[in-house]
Image (cartoon, rainbow, N blue to C red; front, side):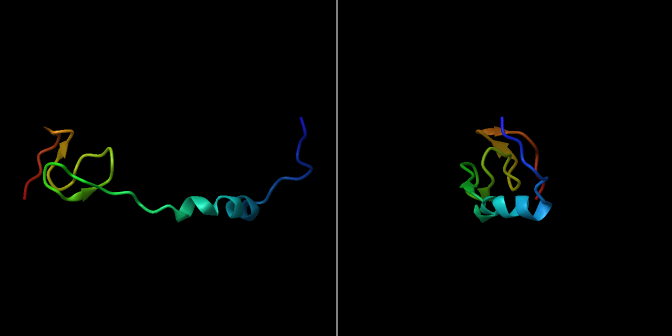
Length: 59
């Protein structure tokens, strides 16, 4: 297989990876309380995940 002649610099590698920074944060609504949360995570405001209370959150 072909091998690179020289090591690619950190800045050149970072330039190739800049498209990964463009993605926005995808938020979903919690079905229990309606607050926005990260998908596949426990809701930080009510502590529920998939209709089960995982952690108890004191108000």
